[in-house]
Image (cartoon, rainbow, N blue to C red):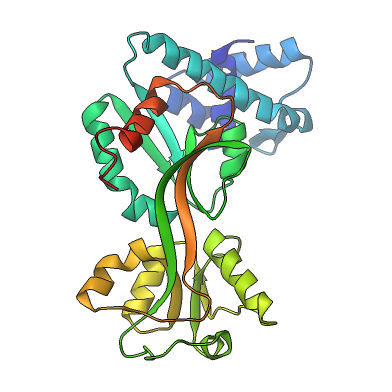
Length: 294
């Protein structure tokens, strides 16, 4: 079993055909097919099934796919470590972050990282995405989360205290603290189901015997912000998303009983994972001379 064989299998899975995988990897299709055939013979199982003109992972291939991904990630780590003997941060740093962090927290941190590690490429993925599986399978190096608690399965590096508030257009604002019953009468806009902000708000409503029933929900906080500027409702958002709008008076925080909700943004990765120079460079930006940029 070789890294090239595993890379070819994963690329065929990703792009859906041998020909497209060959184009991406700059190899002949016959070379990709030979690598897959040799790996199948070595393992004693067919990795792909022919379905019409397409090939799809066989049942055995599906079962082995997580291990293939871990093998590929380990190979990349070894290559990265070999290139980083001089402790230079090089290669690709793959991160997950919610859209609020991608847009409003990470840009200055990435800018600082580019100055200290100019050979490092940062790739960001945002929701919807199963970041936990991706971390365990080494498909990403780390994740930026917004949570009220530290999860014991991760190494946690706190970034910022984050206040999650109810906010609306000035024309909709009520100059009093709303009860949840009163808030419920407004057209509510929230993030997608399962988002940490929404889960906490749902729990808050439940303590009052109510059910949070948003009129609209979006995975992208910038879409929600645009809805607020168009006076489409009251939304639940991290303060950092609307800080400039609040300062200009384009939006207004709406006081609500039991709110705002306290969160913390943090960098996380699996406990016991070896921290390569590329991730170490990001951690250094968080705690080093650039720690005040957030």
